Length: 334
Image (cartoon, rainbow, N blue to C red):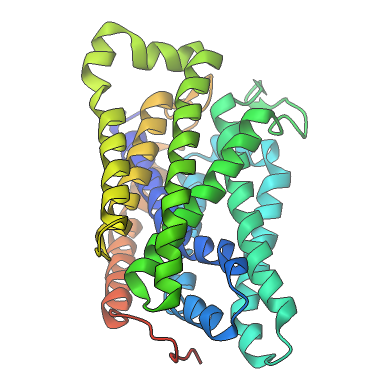
């Protein structure tokens, strides 16, 4: 087997997942913050700030899941049964969130049920993603190349903590996006919310950073052996620096930089998780080479990806450029 093909595909899937977390994270976060105001015009402004982007952001989830199925079918066949319940919960929640975007406007003035669907669907989806993340870090029971665990192996205090951390992290992304994208009362309230959410997120990051090496010797060995520690120590320091910069810029009149540094925190945390688990795609025992598809399949789909990926990137950049600028209180979504 060409050893580099699984590495390339792991990088592509990891990039797609990271882009999904960052891009869909902020619009899920805005919905998580929805109960902070009961004013209909302010809620409209919050939704309008992500209305042109939210459905395109979910492209990266499809690309990540589809890439896993094509490039690492054995991993897909193990991971899906291990997380059937949280995956189905996440998908149903995302459906309700998406439907709420459209139905809320046509149902006015009797749209309270869709406000609830928007908030609850986004919050449950974020929490379910954290459950999946926590369960994957813990590891999956595998025997003879198949999932051999129980239906609720993923439900542990650690995975619940990860779920809460993802909800808080997405809410911070949403708050800093509102600081950047809106004005008036919505932006000022989001600035205050972001300060508290930042403290909570950094607390969760510290807790995960301590819990994972304590519970999993393979992760402790990866980070704390002398040679690795000398190489990897910049990652937690950079994360702390980005957290400090978010805090500092929120106390100023900066608009875009708190959002940018929050994205940097997510990217650094994602890289930290990748470092902790590479080359295992199904922790703790199956590497990317163990679960990879045939090289011919990798090459065939990679050719298609070389055309598809630039199109997605161009479309994403075009939409964000087209709808640049502030969303005003009287803005509309049709």
